[in-house]
Length: 144
Image 1: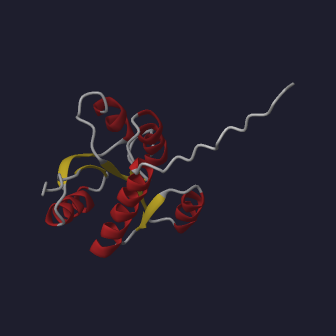
Image 2: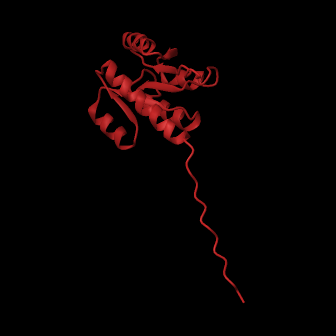
Image 3: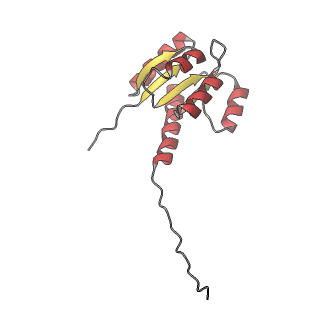
């Protein structure tokens, strides 16, 4: 039996105490934390330098001129990496959930974090699961 590979996660959080605690929690859960970035600008700058993670956990409110929503959109659209968004604002959370985003509402627990990551990887598994393709039989008619 082949052991599953550990997933690499990138954290984007400008509150260093939150980032440290989240990194520690993720490592205890069996994930590898690649690095922690603090701004949307760092995300765009590092995206060409870092190996691609399996998942990005992104705070919505970041220091700098590029917020987590903009940086997350770039990561999802251009890098094709899934994002779990973190916010303390219920209105933003509701708006983003309506768009199908996976959200963690601050303050969150280890189980909340585990569930959000599970949702993302489950969605990915559905996308990567081969579907049975049905081929309708062609009907041939006599055109004479």
